[in-house]
Length: 506
Image 1 (cartoon, rainbow, N blue to C red):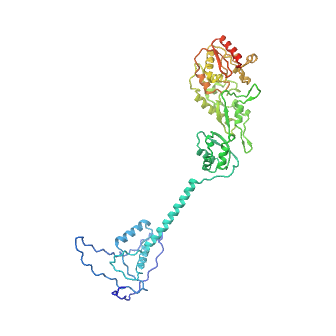
Image 2 (cartoon, helix red, strand yellow; image 1 turned 180 degrees about the vertical axis):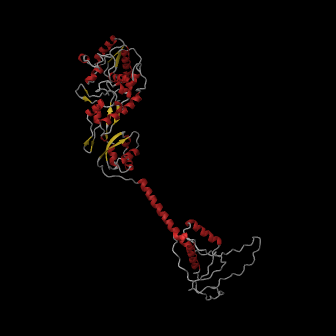
Image 3 (cartoon, rainbow, N blue to C red; image 1 turned 90 degrees about the vertical axis):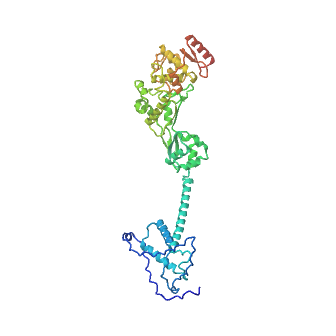
Protein backbone atom coordinates (compact mmCIF):
# COMPACT_ATOMS: atom_id res chain seq x y z
CA UNK A 1 0.00 0.00 0.00
CA UNK A 2 1.43 3.50 -0.82
CA UNK A 3 3.01 5.22 2.12
CA UNK A 4 1.61 8.70 1.52
CA UNK A 5 -2.06 7.83 1.86
CA UNK A 6 -3.82 9.55 4.74
CA UNK A 7 -4.71 7.54 7.72
CA UNK A 8 -8.41 6.68 7.72
CA UNK A 9 -10.38 8.89 9.98
CA UNK A 10 -13.35 8.02 12.01
CA UNK A 11 -16.64 8.83 10.33
CA UNK A 12 -20.18 8.17 11.26
CA UNK A 13 -21.56 4.74 10.43
CA UNK A 14 -23.45 4.40 7.19
CA UNK A 15 -27.09 5.10 7.45
CA UNK A 16 -29.04 1.88 7.66
CA UNK A 17 -30.35 0.91 4.23
CA UNK A 18 -34.02 0.15 3.97
CA UNK A 19 -34.92 -3.35 2.85
CA UNK A 20 -35.82 -3.54 -0.81
CA UNK A 21 -39.48 -3.77 -1.47
CA UNK A 22 -41.13 -6.58 -3.36
CA UNK A 23 -41.79 -6.45 -7.06
CA UNK A 24 -44.41 -3.76 -7.78
CA UNK A 25 -47.96 -4.89 -8.23
CA UNK A 26 -50.57 -3.56 -10.62
CA UNK A 27 -51.96 -1.45 -7.78
CA UNK A 28 -48.52 0.12 -7.22
CA UNK A 29 -48.31 1.07 -10.85
CA UNK A 30 -51.48 3.03 -10.58
CA UNK A 31 -49.89 5.32 -7.91
CA UNK A 32 -47.31 7.71 -9.36
CA UNK A 33 -43.86 7.12 -7.86
CA UNK A 34 -42.34 9.80 -5.63
CA UNK A 35 -40.11 12.28 -7.26
CA UNK A 36 -36.47 11.44 -6.86
CA UNK A 37 -33.70 13.89 -6.77
CA UNK A 38 -31.74 14.26 -9.96
CA UNK A 39 -28.68 12.08 -9.86
CA UNK A 40 -25.48 14.12 -9.80
CA UNK A 41 -23.62 13.69 -13.02
CA UNK A 42 -19.90 13.96 -13.53
CA UNK A 43 -18.90 15.90 -16.60
CA UNK A 44 -15.86 14.91 -18.55
CA UNK A 45 -13.19 17.59 -18.87
CA UNK A 46 -12.93 18.74 -22.46
CA UNK A 47 -9.78 17.51 -24.18
CA UNK A 48 -7.51 20.08 -25.76
CA UNK A 49 -7.40 20.31 -29.55
CA UNK A 50 -4.85 18.00 -31.19
CA UNK A 51 -2.66 20.98 -32.23
CA UNK A 52 -2.50 22.43 -28.73
CA UNK A 53 -0.02 21.27 -26.18
CA UNK A 54 -1.78 19.71 -23.27
CA UNK A 55 -1.17 21.48 -19.98
CA UNK A 56 0.58 19.63 -17.26
CA UNK A 57 -1.66 17.13 -15.59
CA UNK A 58 -2.88 18.33 -12.24
CA UNK A 59 -1.92 16.32 -9.25
CA UNK A 60 -4.28 13.42 -8.68
CA UNK A 61 -6.95 14.04 -6.15
CA UNK A 62 -7.45 11.32 -3.66
CA UNK A 63 -10.64 10.18 -2.14
CA UNK A 64 -11.12 11.14 1.48
CA UNK A 65 -10.02 8.43 3.72
CA UNK A 66 -12.72 5.84 4.03
CA UNK A 67 -13.92 4.19 7.18
CA UNK A 68 -12.15 1.21 8.65
CA UNK A 69 -12.59 -2.06 6.68
CA UNK A 70 -15.26 -3.29 9.05
CA UNK A 71 -17.51 -0.35 8.29
CA UNK A 72 -19.54 -0.02 5.08
CA UNK A 73 -18.89 3.12 3.01
CA UNK A 74 -21.69 5.32 1.88
CA UNK A 75 -20.01 7.42 -0.78
CA UNK A 76 -21.05 6.60 -4.34
CA UNK A 77 -18.87 6.95 -7.38
CA UNK A 78 -21.11 7.71 -10.34
CA UNK A 79 -20.62 6.06 -13.72
CA UNK A 80 -20.01 8.06 -16.81
CA UNK A 81 -23.26 9.45 -18.27
CA UNK A 82 -22.93 7.80 -21.64
CA UNK A 83 -22.06 4.43 -20.11
CA UNK A 84 -24.92 4.60 -17.63
CA UNK A 85 -27.49 5.76 -20.22
CA UNK A 86 -26.51 3.09 -22.74
CA UNK A 87 -26.72 0.32 -20.15
CA UNK A 88 -30.01 1.52 -18.74
CA UNK A 89 -31.63 2.05 -22.16
CA UNK A 90 -30.54 -1.40 -23.27
CA UNK A 91 -32.02 -2.96 -20.15
CA UNK A 92 -35.30 -1.07 -20.48
CA UNK A 93 -35.56 -1.84 -24.18
CA UNK A 94 -35.19 -5.53 -23.46
CA UNK A 95 -37.50 -5.88 -20.52
CA UNK A 96 -39.90 -2.96 -21.00
CA UNK A 97 -41.19 -0.97 -18.07
CA UNK A 98 -41.52 -3.98 -15.87
CA UNK A 99 -39.71 -2.32 -12.98
CA UNK A 100 -40.69 1.00 -11.47
CA UNK A 101 -38.65 3.73 -9.86
CA UNK A 102 -38.49 2.11 -6.44
CA UNK A 103 -36.96 -1.08 -7.77
CA UNK A 104 -34.37 0.96 -9.68
CA UNK A 105 -33.45 2.59 -6.37
CA UNK A 106 -32.94 -0.85 -4.89
CA UNK A 107 -30.51 -1.85 -7.58
CA UNK A 108 -28.71 1.52 -7.34
CA UNK A 109 -28.17 1.06 -3.64
CA UNK A 110 -27.03 -2.48 -4.16
CA UNK A 111 -24.52 -1.33 -6.73
CA UNK A 112 -23.23 1.33 -4.36
CA UNK A 113 -22.58 -1.15 -1.62
CA UNK A 114 -20.87 -3.49 -4.07
CA UNK A 115 -18.64 -0.68 -5.29
CA UNK A 116 -17.66 0.37 -1.79
CA UNK A 117 -16.65 -3.13 -0.72
CA UNK A 118 -13.27 -2.59 -2.30
CA UNK A 119 -10.56 -2.51 0.31
CA UNK A 120 -8.51 0.24 -1.29
CA UNK A 121 -9.68 3.67 -2.33
CA UNK A 122 -9.58 4.50 -6.04
CA UNK A 123 -8.73 7.65 -7.81
CA UNK A 124 -11.65 9.60 -9.15
CA UNK A 125 -10.00 10.00 -12.53
CA UNK A 126 -8.73 6.43 -12.63
CA UNK A 127 -8.53 5.18 -16.24
CA UNK A 128 -9.55 1.67 -15.34
CA UNK A 129 -13.11 0.72 -16.43
CA UNK A 130 -15.63 0.75 -13.62
CA UNK A 131 -16.55 -2.57 -12.18
CA UNK A 132 -19.90 -4.03 -13.09
CA UNK A 133 -22.56 -4.09 -10.45
CA UNK A 134 -25.00 -6.76 -9.49
CA UNK A 135 -27.50 -5.52 -12.04
CA UNK A 136 -25.28 -6.52 -14.95
CA UNK A 137 -24.39 -9.80 -13.26
CA UNK A 138 -28.07 -10.61 -12.95
CA UNK A 139 -28.58 -9.70 -16.58
CA UNK A 140 -25.76 -12.02 -17.57
CA UNK A 141 -27.19 -14.80 -15.45
CA UNK A 142 -30.60 -14.27 -16.97
CA UNK A 143 -29.04 -14.34 -20.45
CA UNK A 144 -27.48 -17.73 -19.77
CA UNK A 145 -30.78 -19.08 -18.47
CA UNK A 146 -32.60 -17.73 -21.52
CA UNK A 147 -30.01 -19.21 -23.87
CA UNK A 148 -30.30 -22.61 -22.23
CA UNK A 149 -34.09 -22.42 -22.42
CA UNK A 150 -33.97 -21.52 -26.13
CA UNK A 151 -31.58 -24.38 -26.85
CA UNK A 152 -33.81 -26.80 -24.97
CA UNK A 153 -36.85 -25.50 -26.84
CA UNK A 154 -35.13 -25.85 -30.19
CA UNK A 155 -33.94 -29.34 -29.34
CA UNK A 156 -37.44 -30.37 -28.30
CA UNK A 157 -38.94 -28.83 -31.42
CA UNK A 158 -36.40 -30.57 -33.61
CA UNK A 159 -37.20 -33.90 -31.99
CA UNK A 160 -40.91 -33.25 -32.36
CA UNK A 161 -40.44 -32.31 -36.02
CA UNK A 162 -38.35 -35.37 -36.76
CA UNK A 163 -40.94 -37.56 -35.10
CA UNK A 164 -43.72 -35.91 -37.09
CA UNK A 165 -41.82 -36.24 -40.37
CA UNK A 166 -40.30 -39.67 -40.04
CA UNK A 167 -42.53 -41.32 -37.46
CA UNK A 168 -46.01 -42.68 -38.11
CA UNK A 169 -48.72 -44.64 -36.37
CA UNK A 170 -49.45 -48.22 -37.38
CA UNK A 171 -51.71 -51.02 -36.24
CA UNK A 172 -50.54 -54.55 -35.61
CA UNK A 173 -52.02 -57.70 -37.10
CA UNK A 174 -54.41 -58.57 -39.92
CA UNK A 175 -57.35 -56.47 -38.76
CA UNK A 176 -60.73 -56.94 -37.13
CA UNK A 177 -64.11 -56.41 -38.84
CA UNK A 178 -64.76 -56.19 -42.61
CA UNK A 179 -65.00 -52.86 -44.38
CA UNK A 180 -65.38 -51.77 -48.01
CA UNK A 181 -63.07 -49.11 -49.43
CA UNK A 182 -63.37 -47.55 -52.88
CA UNK A 183 -60.27 -46.83 -54.94
CA UNK A 184 -60.92 -44.09 -57.49
CA UNK A 185 -59.44 -43.82 -60.95
CA UNK A 186 -56.13 -41.96 -60.86
CA UNK A 187 -55.58 -42.47 -57.12
CA UNK A 188 -51.92 -42.36 -56.12
CA UNK A 189 -50.44 -44.49 -53.37
CA UNK A 190 -50.78 -41.53 -51.00
CA UNK A 191 -54.44 -41.06 -51.98
CA UNK A 192 -55.18 -44.73 -51.38
CA UNK A 193 -53.42 -44.55 -48.00
CA UNK A 194 -55.53 -41.54 -47.06
CA UNK A 195 -58.75 -43.36 -47.98
CA UNK A 196 -57.70 -46.39 -45.97
CA UNK A 197 -56.90 -44.23 -42.94
CA UNK A 198 -60.26 -42.42 -43.20
CA UNK A 199 -62.02 -45.80 -43.30
CA UNK A 200 -60.14 -47.05 -40.23
CA UNK A 201 -58.21 -49.71 -42.15
CA UNK A 202 -54.76 -48.34 -41.30
CA UNK A 203 -53.68 -46.11 -38.43
CA UNK A 204 -52.12 -43.50 -40.73
CA UNK A 205 -51.63 -42.96 -44.47
CA UNK A 206 -47.89 -43.29 -44.02
CA UNK A 207 -48.23 -46.78 -42.58
CA UNK A 208 -49.66 -47.88 -45.92
CA UNK A 209 -47.30 -45.79 -48.05
CA UNK A 210 -44.19 -47.12 -46.31
CA UNK A 211 -45.38 -50.71 -46.70
CA UNK A 212 -46.25 -50.10 -50.36
CA UNK A 213 -42.67 -49.03 -51.09
CA UNK A 214 -41.65 -52.68 -50.82
CA UNK A 215 -44.31 -53.98 -53.24
CA UNK A 216 -44.62 -52.46 -56.72
CA UNK A 217 -47.86 -54.36 -57.37
CA UNK A 218 -49.73 -51.64 -55.49
CA UNK A 219 -49.31 -49.42 -58.54
CA UNK A 220 -51.40 -51.84 -60.60
CA UNK A 221 -54.44 -51.67 -58.29
CA UNK A 222 -57.52 -50.89 -60.38
CA UNK A 223 -60.39 -48.58 -59.46
CA UNK A 224 -63.23 -50.28 -57.63
CA UNK A 225 -64.42 -51.53 -54.26
CA UNK A 226 -62.10 -53.59 -52.07
CA UNK A 227 -62.99 -55.71 -49.08
CA UNK A 228 -60.47 -55.09 -46.31
CA UNK A 229 -60.53 -55.08 -42.53
CA UNK A 230 -60.35 -52.37 -39.94
CA UNK A 231 -57.19 -51.85 -37.89
CA UNK A 232 -54.82 -53.61 -40.26
CA UNK A 233 -51.09 -53.01 -40.21
CA UNK A 234 -49.75 -51.22 -43.26
CA UNK A 235 -48.08 -54.40 -44.46
CA UNK A 236 -51.27 -56.44 -44.06
CA UNK A 237 -53.31 -53.81 -45.92
CA UNK A 238 -50.91 -53.86 -48.87
CA UNK A 239 -50.84 -57.65 -48.93
CA UNK A 240 -54.64 -57.85 -48.95
CA UNK A 241 -55.24 -55.05 -51.45
CA UNK A 242 -53.16 -56.66 -54.20
CA UNK A 243 -55.00 -59.99 -53.97
CA UNK A 244 -57.49 -60.55 -56.83
CA UNK A 245 -60.16 -61.69 -54.36
CA UNK A 246 -60.03 -58.37 -52.50
CA UNK A 247 -61.86 -56.54 -55.26
CA UNK A 248 -65.63 -56.93 -55.08
CA UNK A 249 -68.65 -55.47 -56.86
CA UNK A 250 -67.24 -55.88 -60.38
CA UNK A 251 -69.74 -56.07 -63.24
CA UNK A 252 -68.06 -56.80 -66.56
CA UNK A 253 -70.48 -56.91 -69.49
CA UNK A 254 -69.24 -58.07 -72.86
CA UNK A 255 -70.66 -56.66 -76.06
CA UNK A 256 -73.60 -58.71 -77.30
CA UNK A 257 -74.78 -59.72 -73.82
CA UNK A 258 -78.55 -59.83 -73.38
CA UNK A 259 -80.71 -59.48 -70.28
CA UNK A 260 -81.59 -63.16 -69.82
CA UNK A 261 -79.26 -66.13 -69.59
CA UNK A 262 -78.37 -68.06 -72.76
CA UNK A 263 -78.24 -71.82 -73.18
CA UNK A 264 -75.18 -72.98 -75.08
CA UNK A 265 -75.18 -76.02 -77.40
CA UNK A 266 -73.29 -77.97 -74.74
CA UNK A 267 -76.12 -77.15 -72.31
CA UNK A 268 -73.94 -74.76 -70.30
CA UNK A 269 -75.38 -71.38 -69.35
CA UNK A 270 -74.00 -67.98 -70.19
CA UNK A 271 -75.11 -65.42 -67.63
CA UNK A 272 -77.15 -62.51 -68.87
CA UNK A 273 -77.11 -58.94 -67.52
CA UNK A 274 -79.43 -59.69 -64.60
CA UNK A 275 -77.43 -62.70 -63.40
CA UNK A 276 -74.12 -60.87 -63.72
CA UNK A 277 -75.40 -57.84 -61.82
CA UNK A 278 -76.79 -60.08 -59.07
CA UNK A 279 -73.40 -61.77 -58.68
CA UNK A 280 -71.60 -58.43 -58.64
CA UNK A 281 -73.73 -57.35 -55.70
CA UNK A 282 -72.47 -60.24 -53.59
CA UNK A 283 -69.98 -60.02 -50.76
CA UNK A 284 -69.66 -61.66 -47.38
CA UNK A 285 -69.17 -58.94 -44.79
CA UNK A 286 -68.59 -60.34 -41.31
CA UNK A 287 -70.63 -63.43 -42.21
CA UNK A 288 -73.57 -61.54 -43.76
CA UNK A 289 -74.32 -61.86 -47.48
CA UNK A 290 -75.09 -58.74 -49.52
CA UNK A 291 -76.40 -60.54 -52.65
CA UNK A 292 -79.43 -59.04 -54.42
CA UNK A 293 -81.59 -61.70 -56.14
CA UNK A 294 -82.29 -61.57 -59.87
CA UNK A 295 -86.02 -61.36 -59.15
CA UNK A 296 -85.59 -58.07 -57.27
CA UNK A 297 -83.51 -56.60 -60.08
CA UNK A 298 -86.05 -57.68 -62.69
CA UNK A 299 -88.96 -56.22 -60.71
CA UNK A 300 -87.29 -52.80 -60.43
CA UNK A 301 -86.37 -52.85 -64.13
CA UNK A 302 -89.91 -53.75 -65.20
CA UNK A 303 -91.92 -51.55 -62.84
CA UNK A 304 -89.64 -48.67 -61.90
CA UNK A 305 -89.54 -45.15 -63.34
CA UNK A 306 -86.82 -45.47 -65.96
CA UNK A 307 -85.99 -41.76 -66.10
CA UNK A 308 -85.69 -41.67 -62.32
CA UNK A 309 -83.41 -44.69 -62.52
CA UNK A 310 -81.10 -42.86 -64.92
CA UNK A 311 -82.23 -44.10 -68.35
CA UNK A 312 -81.90 -41.32 -70.99
CA UNK A 313 -85.26 -39.77 -71.80
CA UNK A 314 -84.91 -40.47 -75.54
CA UNK A 315 -84.68 -44.18 -74.71
CA UNK A 316 -87.27 -44.20 -71.92
CA UNK A 317 -89.87 -42.60 -74.19
CA UNK A 318 -89.16 -45.13 -76.95
CA UNK A 319 -89.79 -48.16 -74.73
CA UNK A 320 -92.89 -46.81 -73.02
CA UNK A 321 -95.20 -49.10 -75.02
CA UNK A 322 -92.96 -52.14 -75.39
CA UNK A 323 -93.04 -55.37 -73.43
CA UNK A 324 -91.84 -54.36 -69.97
CA UNK A 325 -89.99 -57.65 -69.65
CA UNK A 326 -87.56 -56.52 -72.37
CA UNK A 327 -87.78 -52.74 -72.13
CA UNK A 328 -84.29 -52.20 -70.74
CA UNK A 329 -82.63 -54.52 -73.26
CA UNK A 330 -79.61 -52.83 -74.81
CA UNK A 331 -79.75 -49.85 -72.42
CA UNK A 332 -76.80 -51.08 -70.36
CA UNK A 333 -73.70 -50.53 -72.46
CA UNK A 334 -70.91 -53.11 -72.37
CA UNK A 335 -67.90 -52.45 -70.18
CA UNK A 336 -66.79 -52.65 -66.56
CA UNK A 337 -68.97 -51.25 -63.78
CA UNK A 338 -68.13 -50.97 -60.09
CA UNK A 339 -71.10 -51.50 -57.80
CA UNK A 340 -70.98 -51.49 -54.04
CA UNK A 341 -72.03 -54.68 -52.26
CA UNK A 342 -74.81 -53.74 -49.88
CA UNK A 343 -76.72 -51.58 -52.36
CA UNK A 344 -80.33 -52.58 -52.99
CA UNK A 345 -81.77 -53.36 -56.42
CA UNK A 346 -82.77 -49.76 -57.12
CA UNK A 347 -79.34 -48.41 -56.20
CA UNK A 348 -77.59 -51.03 -58.29
CA UNK A 349 -79.62 -50.41 -61.45
CA UNK A 350 -79.51 -46.65 -61.01
CA UNK A 351 -75.72 -46.64 -60.77
CA UNK A 352 -75.40 -48.83 -63.87
CA UNK A 353 -77.94 -46.88 -65.96
CA UNK A 354 -76.33 -43.52 -65.22
CA UNK A 355 -72.87 -44.70 -66.15
CA UNK A 356 -74.22 -46.44 -69.25
CA UNK A 357 -75.90 -43.21 -70.38
CA UNK A 358 -72.52 -41.49 -70.25
CA UNK A 359 -70.96 -44.22 -72.36
CA UNK A 360 -73.73 -44.00 -74.94
CA UNK A 361 -73.21 -40.26 -75.08
CA UNK A 362 -69.54 -40.84 -75.79
CA UNK A 363 -70.49 -43.33 -78.53
CA UNK A 364 -72.67 -40.72 -80.24
CA UNK A 365 -76.14 -41.36 -78.89
CA UNK A 366 -78.34 -39.47 -79.20
CA UNK A 367 -76.45 -36.57 -80.83
CA UNK A 368 -74.14 -38.41 -83.22
CA UNK A 369 -74.64 -38.85 -86.98
CA UNK A 370 -77.65 -40.91 -87.94
CA UNK A 371 -79.31 -42.10 -91.09
CA UNK A 372 -82.41 -40.39 -92.43
CA UNK A 373 -85.67 -41.27 -90.70
CA UNK A 374 -83.83 -43.16 -87.92
CA UNK A 375 -84.24 -42.10 -84.32
CA UNK A 376 -81.44 -42.55 -81.76
CA UNK A 377 -83.29 -45.54 -80.31
CA UNK A 378 -83.68 -47.16 -83.75
CA UNK A 379 -79.97 -46.61 -84.32
CA UNK A 380 -79.37 -48.48 -81.07
CA UNK A 381 -81.59 -51.34 -82.26
CA UNK A 382 -79.68 -51.60 -85.56
CA UNK A 383 -76.38 -51.55 -83.65
CA UNK A 384 -77.53 -54.51 -81.55
CA UNK A 385 -78.35 -56.48 -84.72
CA UNK A 386 -74.93 -55.67 -86.17
CA UNK A 387 -73.29 -56.83 -82.94
CA UNK A 388 -74.95 -60.24 -83.03
CA UNK A 389 -74.70 -60.86 -86.78
CA UNK A 390 -71.08 -60.11 -87.64
CA UNK A 391 -67.52 -59.52 -86.52
CA UNK A 392 -66.01 -56.04 -86.21
CA UNK A 393 -64.33 -56.24 -89.58
CA UNK A 394 -67.74 -56.67 -91.24
CA UNK A 395 -69.78 -54.28 -89.06
CA UNK A 396 -70.10 -51.50 -91.65
CA UNK A 397 -71.08 -53.91 -94.45
CA UNK A 398 -73.69 -55.63 -92.27
CA UNK A 399 -75.04 -52.18 -91.44
CA UNK A 400 -75.33 -51.37 -95.13
CA UNK A 401 -77.28 -54.59 -95.82
CA UNK A 402 -79.79 -53.69 -93.05
CA UNK A 403 -80.30 -50.16 -94.36
CA UNK A 404 -80.62 -51.35 -97.96
CA UNK A 405 -83.27 -53.95 -97.07
CA UNK A 406 -85.20 -51.46 -94.93
CA UNK A 407 -85.10 -48.98 -97.78
CA UNK A 408 -86.61 -51.59 -100.14
CA UNK A 409 -89.16 -52.64 -97.49
CA UNK A 410 -87.68 -56.12 -97.43
CA UNK A 411 -87.84 -58.38 -94.41
CA UNK A 412 -84.50 -58.45 -92.61
CA UNK A 413 -84.59 -62.25 -92.18
CA UNK A 414 -81.96 -62.28 -89.43
CA UNK A 415 -81.48 -65.50 -87.46
CA UNK A 416 -80.26 -63.52 -84.45
CA UNK A 417 -83.70 -62.00 -83.88
CA UNK A 418 -85.38 -65.42 -83.95
CA UNK A 419 -82.88 -66.93 -81.54
CA UNK A 420 -83.16 -63.92 -79.20
CA UNK A 421 -86.55 -64.92 -77.82
CA UNK A 422 -85.38 -68.54 -77.65
CA UNK A 423 -82.32 -67.54 -75.58
CA UNK A 424 -80.00 -69.30 -77.99
CA UNK A 425 -76.66 -68.02 -79.34
CA UNK A 426 -76.75 -70.12 -82.52
CA UNK A 427 -76.40 -68.42 -85.89
CA UNK A 428 -78.63 -70.73 -87.83
CA UNK A 429 -82.32 -71.46 -87.34
CA UNK A 430 -84.60 -74.19 -88.61
CA UNK A 431 -87.95 -73.96 -90.35
CA UNK A 432 -89.93 -74.39 -87.16
CA UNK A 433 -88.03 -71.58 -85.45
CA UNK A 434 -88.54 -69.22 -88.36
CA UNK A 435 -92.25 -70.00 -88.46
CA UNK A 436 -92.93 -68.98 -84.88
CA UNK A 437 -94.86 -65.74 -84.76
CA UNK A 438 -93.66 -62.90 -82.59
CA UNK A 439 -92.51 -59.28 -82.77
CA UNK A 440 -88.86 -60.34 -82.94
CA UNK A 441 -89.25 -62.74 -85.88
CA UNK A 442 -87.77 -60.77 -88.79
CA UNK A 443 -88.60 -63.63 -91.16
CA UNK A 444 -92.26 -62.89 -90.63
CA UNK A 445 -92.24 -59.16 -89.86
CA UNK A 446 -91.03 -56.19 -91.86
CA UNK A 447 -88.88 -53.58 -90.22
CA UNK A 448 -86.89 -53.54 -87.00
CA UNK A 449 -87.63 -55.52 -83.84
CA UNK A 450 -89.23 -53.48 -81.03
CA UNK A 451 -86.11 -53.37 -78.85
CA UNK A 452 -82.41 -54.09 -79.14
CA UNK A 453 -81.50 -57.76 -78.83
CA UNK A 454 -78.18 -57.22 -77.01
CA UNK A 455 -75.81 -54.63 -75.61
CA UNK A 456 -74.04 -53.16 -78.66
CA UNK A 457 -70.44 -51.99 -78.58
CA UNK A 458 -69.38 -48.48 -79.55
CA UNK A 459 -67.99 -49.91 -82.80
CA UNK A 460 -71.39 -51.37 -83.66
CA UNK A 461 -73.05 -48.03 -82.84
CA UNK A 462 -70.56 -46.25 -85.10
CA UNK A 463 -71.33 -48.69 -87.92
CA UNK A 464 -75.06 -48.13 -87.45
CA UNK A 465 -74.48 -44.39 -87.72
CA UNK A 466 -72.24 -44.63 -90.76
CA UNK A 467 -72.61 -47.82 -92.86
CA UNK A 468 -70.29 -48.73 -95.69
CA UNK A 469 -71.14 -47.81 -99.26
CA UNK A 470 -72.56 -50.68 -101.31
CA UNK A 471 -75.64 -52.31 -102.82
CA UNK A 472 -75.51 -55.56 -100.88
CA UNK A 473 -78.77 -57.13 -99.85
CA UNK A 474 -77.51 -60.48 -98.56
CA UNK A 475 -74.73 -61.84 -96.37
CA UNK A 476 -73.85 -65.17 -94.76
CA UNK A 477 -71.13 -66.41 -92.45
CA UNK A 478 -68.77 -68.15 -94.81
CA UNK A 479 -65.69 -68.85 -92.72
CA UNK A 480 -64.96 -70.41 -89.35
CA UNK A 481 -63.28 -67.20 -88.23
CA UNK A 482 -66.67 -65.49 -88.43
CA UNK A 483 -66.16 -63.52 -91.63
CA UNK A 484 -69.20 -63.02 -93.86
CA UNK A 485 -69.64 -63.07 -97.62
CA UNK A 486 -71.86 -60.35 -99.16
CA UNK A 487 -74.00 -60.46 -102.25
CA UNK A 488 -76.20 -58.13 -104.27
CA UNK A 489 -78.40 -60.77 -105.85
CA UNK A 490 -80.09 -63.83 -104.46
CA UNK A 491 -78.18 -66.07 -106.85
CA UNK A 492 -74.87 -64.77 -105.54
CA UNK A 493 -76.09 -65.33 -102.03
CA UNK A 494 -77.06 -68.97 -102.71
CA UNK A 495 -73.56 -69.56 -104.05
CA UNK A 496 -72.01 -68.08 -100.90
CA UNK A 497 -74.20 -70.31 -98.72
CA UNK A 498 -73.06 -73.42 -100.56
CA UNK A 499 -69.41 -72.46 -100.16
CA UNK A 500 -69.95 -71.79 -96.44
CA UNK A 501 -71.45 -75.22 -95.94
CA UNK A 502 -68.55 -76.78 -97.77
CA UNK A 503 -66.07 -75.03 -95.52
CA UNK A 504 -67.92 -76.03 -92.38
CA UNK A 505 -68.42 -72.41 -91.43
CA UNK A 506 -71.56 -73.36 -89.47
